[in-house]
Length: 250
Ligand code: PGA
Image (cartoon, rainbow, N blue to C red; front, side, top):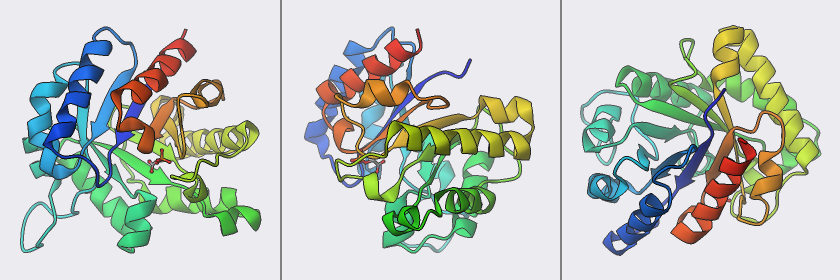
């Protein structure tokens, strides 16, 4: 059984005053089966540790592919770990778009993250133009071949399928479209890593997941959780998404 994962991506949001949201989240989910992850901005990471307790695990939103060196403004995987992270999100579409990150770079970062003992949440997803041109499956396959490392396990790798056009827009694919892509990702994982590892890697859906659409998305086959942006900023909203995920595991 794959453990469900509710992952919150705060992006470039959150000052010290937002730490109370993590207190509320941790208090509400002391005994929740679902694994709860928050990726705060790097400035809050170490300060969030005491608030997260055992209920919430923390993540970076990106890391550099090298261990250290002359890379002004960048953060290494070891630094994230040192600050209290156990996960890192890599290849998010906003990184691919805003910073021109390529599949090769995402793969190098993923290797660095795993080598430093972090678990990687690798993001993939098609643009609207690619979906309209009926290229979704090809794009997803290409991103998987290019972005994923050769060595991975169900413990240290998570895939997040995030259609670029669904992020922050309030639009989501149909449930059939989500199922088609998640089943394809599962098949490709099994082919690349073997059935054991391929079946144990968790596949998250991301893009406009909200309290009112979470339950139906979590019923789709091979959806093992969600990567949530906007709705992870408030404990109340994220909490109802976590509860929907918990209920889907029953
Ligand atoms: P959203 O963002 O939930 O605000 O659409 C999702 C993401 O970018 O991970």
